Amino acid sequence: MNSEEVPFTLQNRRGETLVGVHHRASESRGTIVMLHGWSGTRSGPHQMLTRAARYFSEQGLDCVRFDFSGRGDSDGDTLLATLATMRDDARDVFRWVEKQNKAPMWVLGLCSGCEIAVAAVEPQMKGAILWSAPVFAALPEESGQKQKRASNLKKYARKLLNPATYAKILRGQIDTAGVKSAVQGGGGAAHKNRESNEAGQLPPGFRASSLKGWRDFKGDIWQIYGGADPILESARHFYASQSPHISHFHVVENANHSFYGLGWERETFDVTGKWLKEI
Image (tube, rainbow, N blue to C red):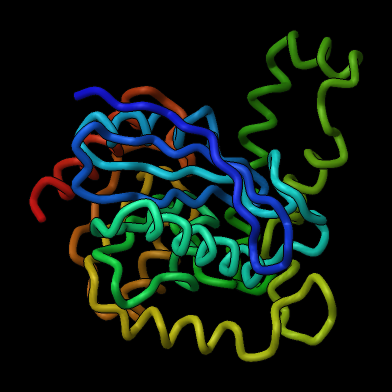
């Protein structure tokens, strides 16, 4: 099945320009809006969202990828971005998609993009596809810091055994401050998840109102995790308690959080594609 990739821009409700790509299937039966992770872009880690969009468009589904404000090619101040501003961006994209066609719509999140899916999902949607969903809007003390520190420490320890790592350090190609923060368990969205009236923080009531909307959602909810993802058990318990239902749940054996491996990535695509064909 033939498809085409068309760049687009739109203005969000704050007057910022969002940049994206619309993957158009030749005979579309619906649209998947893809939401990237906290510090990512519309391509996703190791181009995963780009490849996913091409995969699904060949199966007859339009796909829309875009950069949240303050990320990638889109306008906006990164420091002011929150789950709330990203939710608003997602809903502005939903409105744009509805102008393109009236076909069914799904939202697909990867990592923190799943939190945006939870906050942004709307009653008319057919379903939400969550790949490696963390606990929603977790505060720093709730976000699995110990597991993240241990996982990151192992990852960077392996890299230190590679001589090429030292060459990159000398050339200034490695964000050593970022590595230090990751090993210590810092960074990410959790430090911005406190509710207050301050810029760059979540507005009061955001967590409760978002989870109420999620619990009221009637569409399909599909979840996939990597078996080696340190957040698997805590996140699975959270969504089992907060979701109205989980239509399908799948674990990619031995895969890490971002499915770094062509086999793991392909299994994620194939399983999701199978679910989409069943509806």
